[in-house]
Amino acid sequence: MTQARERAPLTRPYGSALAAPPQPANLADILERVLDKGIVIAGDIRVNLLDIELLTIKIRLLVASVDKAQEMGIDWWRRDPMLSGGGNGDDDRARDE
Amino acid sequence: MSETASYLYAIAAPVGDDVLDGLRGVADEPVRVVRHRDLVAVVGTVDVSAGGAFGEEALARNLDDLGWLKAAAQAHHGVVDGVARAVPAAPLRLATIVADDDGVRERLDRWHDGFRRALDEVAGRAEWSVKVYAPEVSPPDTDAEPARAPGTPGTGAAYLIRRKAAATARDDAFARATAVAGQVHEELTRYAVDARRLAVQDQRLTGHDTPMSLNGAYLVPVDGADTFAAVVESLRERHEDCRFQLAGPWPAYSFVTVEEP
Image (cartoon, rainbow over all chains, first blue to last red; front, side, top):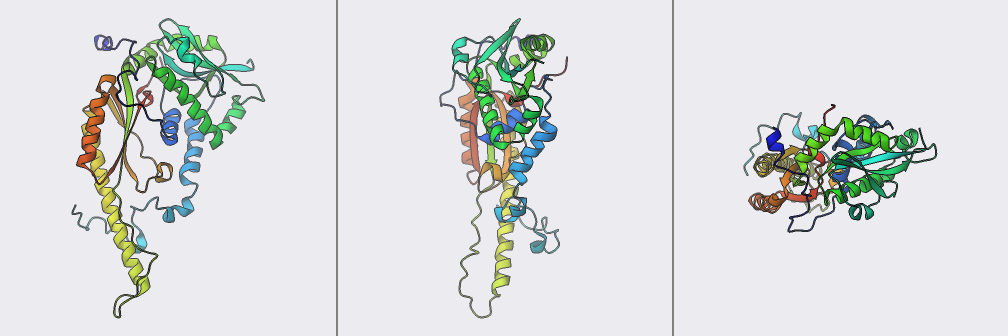
């Protein structure tokens, strides 16, 4: 384990060998990373991102318009019971690509 | 506790002032380093007084405010990204705040081996994101109602038939995108040091016309980035009905884990 670690000295940043210029990250990508990833250590100010705020954010961002979900098409790939005649029609439909 | 505290952005290899000078943090504050042994913590000073934005109560309130959160997340990312472009850096999660720089040094000491391992893991590597979206399905023409020939189903029935056909087409498109996602992730994992499938993002967030079936994160060596991008391009050509999105390079958010010492 240790000898493998020594292959990667603390010298190379990540941006040094790229042909293409970097793209700015979009907000969803940033939020999911800064809230849910990264190193987690206990600070002196107590925040509970995962249990409370992240949930709130998800609710705000994702489910705020749940009443409009159908017209927005959020879960359009799910079975619509009204159309599937009681719902077990997923498996018997041919999927010829 | 004093009225200010130290907000941590990243653990990094020693980094020059020229890099830090150009960066501003979550409170628009300048950032600096707290050094301990061979590591630094990149920190900023934030106001934790009753009237400040980063005291416990204010912070809980602010994090609940999407506008505030958006700005803070972008600023946090800006600092981490600026540092990670210059030296190996392991991002900390948003809103990691300790009382003062002594507290920062104490953490650098206590967690040193874990931080060091995390940095070794990401040094010379960057995180790339590859997303796959389901194919477009031509929408049923629900608004325009053509004149009905005698003997054909009535308007309501025709509408339901069209809706059912559209739902079926979308089901098929999503099933196809799910299968493509598995193949793409498996292939890309071969070109990455490490790989993770993150939860797919809701369509409301992505703004795309079709749902996401893959939200992959890949830790790729810096000198393998062009090859990785070429592989993504070839996968895109192979599955041209699905939409692909490649983004990066980013700090290795999804690949830094440090266990309690």
